[in-house]
Length: 502
Picture 1 (cartoon, rainbow, N blue to C red):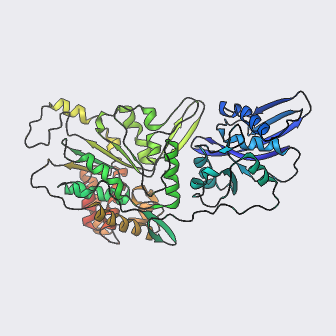
Picture 2 (tube, rainbow, N blue to C red):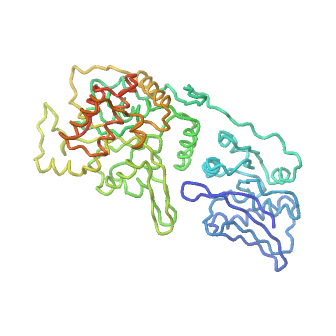
């Protein structure tokens, strides 16, 4: 028995698959076993044609391909190349066990790329179970960005066979060690960013309180809720926020590219974080992911590392809003189905926007509100207290005035975010302030006697929950970082308290 290695998706992570081959006595036949999907079973015809086109003569034996382990569903046309290579190698006695082989075959034996290759190989690399791989040459521009893997690009089945039989391997494809973007260096680690702002905060007039909250939200990845009349600039702030987010590490850029591919896009490999803005009529499955046999990733998973923006927040279904509480707290989402259970990372910055009442004019100084108290209470009651408890920053935006002027640009805000980011890294934090655990809060957010008295008074006056206190401390820590202060001071804590919805 001979074997090569390949892989398949199991949820959002890849699992290694052994492609095993035997040729036994019996009536001539060609069988593939091991829970293969239609794309793999159809590969028999592609493999036959590719082999016959390259002057291979099928032996009069029973050929069996087994995809192990057999209890995992396999999918993808990238199994074509390892299957054909094992059959063509015949009686070759060389070692093959540590070779990963990926590629879809054309009928003439040419090797073409598969859209799943990048996320599969990136997942294997993150698990540390792949060292070298044979891949389509057309995929090398994307795959070579994945570190710690030696790639060999091939154009045809013959190139693959020559490579597997070679006693001395040719020079591997060179890997790209870094990206060509502006960067911050901390402890020899590079964090990349760009200074292009297609949507700029300088275009927003007035709303200084909301701009300040956007700066704090970006610097610490804190959840933000904007409430204001229609046209006050809520969506403008949310769409500009993504361009002033903290820099990305090399691995984070690769993860963003993986999410782009899972969405069906061509990966950009830029330090731009994702921005997802589902409509309020979206189904629960489209937002959180789902599926009967295979749990597909949803908007919450695709927003990982970036922003999830819910415009017209109270119009989202109660089911969606309550289900959102888990990823807002735990920063991952679990999808349970009869046939599968999958956990997706969901470490995103949540931004919500809402009107103060159904007609939107409650805060207006020029237009009378048409809503009754019952309608306003019903509208606002769609957001439960446990949901609002997970919001770090709540801002009421005032109506637009003729005196409002532009004040600060995205370039200026982004510079402050990068400075706060470095301060968090210099303290030894693995995550930004918004994702600190309880133990990390105790370590990185110490309070002196004066600040402890402030938080104790706030607990008694406002009936703050333990979660609310933790979030206030994390916001105060970010405000101190923006101000360049080593410790949380009374002013930082009072500002953090002012952003709590009461």
